[in-house]
Image (cartoon, rainbow, N blue to C red):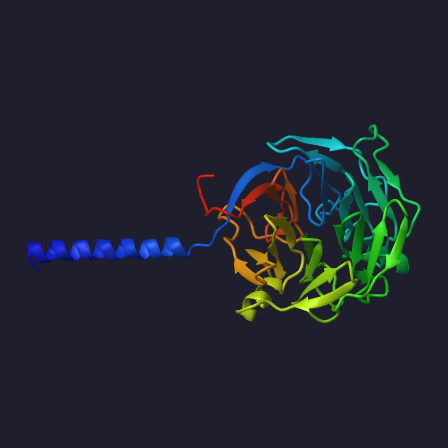
Length: 343
C-alpha cells in the first residue's frame, strides 16, 4: 500500500470511529449518579426513610451479620453534605418489613415482623416521630392498631391529609390486597377498595394526587403490574403502558426497589429479579411511558431493599444490600444529565 492510500485509509478509519462514538454518545441514557457521602451508622437494608422540613431521617432496618442485634433501632437525620446527626432511637421492638410515610411534618412507621429460629412475630402498632419535640420525647406510640393483626412488607403513600397503607404479608402467610386510609388526627383506619393485585415488597409514588403502585411479589411469583389509585372515587385500575409493553414488564418485574418523584415523573431503581439489579427507570404518567435511564455508575453496587428520598429538589439513594453485603453509600441522582464519571 503506497503512502497516499495509507493516509486515506487512516483518515477513513478515524472518521468511522468518530462517527460510531457520536452515535454511541447520542444513544446513551440520561441520568447521572453522584456520590454524596457515606452513612455514619451501621450498614443495613430495609430501613425507614422520610423527609421533614427538608431534612432527611433514616434508621431502623436490619443486617444479619450482627447476630446479637440484627434488627436495628437507631435513627439519624441528614441535611446533606455529609452532615449526619443521631436523634432519638426507635423505642418500639426493632423489626423489618416496616411501612413508613411523612405527613404534616411528622414521620410515621408501623407494622413489620421479626423472626427467630422457630417463628415470625408480626406487629400492628404505629409510631409517630416529631423532630420538634425535645430529645427523649421525639417518638410516641399512637393509640390505634393496624387492622387484621398487622402486616409486613406493606407499602404506604400520602395524598392530601391522609396516608394510605396497602398490601403486605400477613401472619398466616397470605398476601393482602387491602388498602386502608389513615388520618393521624382522627387516629382511625378506614378500609378502602382493594388493589387489583395482591402484593408486598412493592413500590409506590404519587403524581398529581394519584398514586401508582407496582412490582412486588405475591404467593407464587413476582407481580409485574402497575396500578393507579384515584382517592376521589376510591378506585384502583391496572395501567398498561403505551408502545413497547415488554419495557413495562422489565421495569416492573422486581421486588425491593426504591422509588421517588422528580419533576412530576416517577423513578424506580434497583431491586431484585433472580439477580440484584442496577437499573433505573422513568415513568411519565401523561405519556403513560416507561424509559430506561442510565444504570448505576461503575462505583455503585447493584442493590435491593435500599431507600430513597427527595430533599431540596435532589433525589437520594442510600444503603441496601448487594452481592457483597450491606451498603452505606449515599448517592444523588440527576435525571436530566448524562453520566459524568468525574463526579
